[in-house]
Image (cartoon, rainbow, N blue to C red; front, side):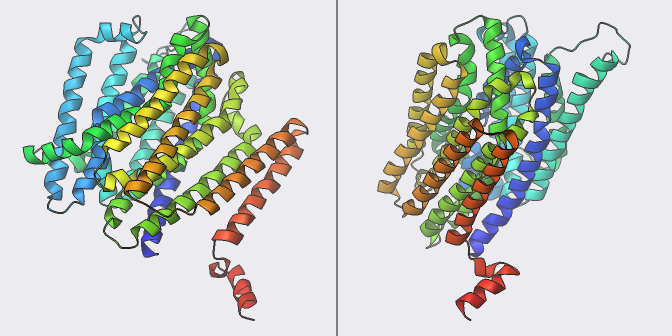
Length: 501
């Protein structure tokens, strides 16, 4: 239980900071959607470019975060040498790739559809290269169990980003003052400023991490490098395939949408804005991942490790299903995060959130092949999921627009999750509490259907009131079934008395 308490503590810190950071980051959505109307397609450009970014960050880190934790806790490895070698490898690949991209910027920009704006590609690639390098010092903070510093730097980065977005996208254009402080009646800002601001914030964060990378030295051990690369290359394939499940739709959409390029970007912008509401599930999964990865590798030698993994799976699902119901229950309030011109796409939110829950389960299941050094299986599972998504997008985007993207992700994560579970039970069997898990999934599904029905057949406030009752009912079932009420403060005295009058 002490191990679970430690995991809960780290998850709480990572989770709270992640939620705070994401909440602050949400402010970018109303700022940018207010500045760029849906019909203009600029937010579609942002969505499309950041989809490429999400793939590039996986490519440039090439699975080294997970590999780093594996080797830092592996017998016979020198942690300092592992860290320095990892840092050197990622620094070298990030720097070299940046030089190559900048050297061939025009053909690359033309290939991704931005021939007239090569600066979009140049600025964002340099930003991604720096982010990839910073991933290792941030992983080192997690290894050292310094979640407060980790969280603080992430939040500072976002606060700086928000401030500069407000200044350059809202305040200066409203005052007709250009970036040089000169009054200009015709002054407007191009969407490129979003990317310039991101680059500035990334460089600022890099400097704040100086102690973690600037004072360590860049020594390199070839033998350690070879061992790490043999472990990590399947993780790279898995990471790329897994990220394709999130990014492929935003990349493919402009190519397969049945309409003009401008309309495609406008529709993509609506999809990109609306899935921001669903990203609360990404916050939870990310917070869980930050704490769970070092926890799993550290507990791998314990005799009760499989029992603990099974318990964690159940509680992860309970919490994410509760979060799903809360977001759906108050969607009519949360929708004000984005501009009204984007509201037509809100129907993607429940589908995307359900897909993210399955991705979290898949991540939880993934440790069987990481702990047994069969990482190639992760590449297989993610590859199959990516194939399902791409085929779904190509076939259905021309007919169902961005809804095809949402359901494609749902199908992809579902396939990856199911295949990982059944094959994992062969190589690393864990007795998951399937009966309890299925009960909560069924209860959440019925609750969602009831919410949706009442929403369509009642007034706004009646719907919100009903949704609140449903959420409280779900929470009551959870408390009665899976949380020890007798251990709670104040009310616990009553339950103890009932058990022992």
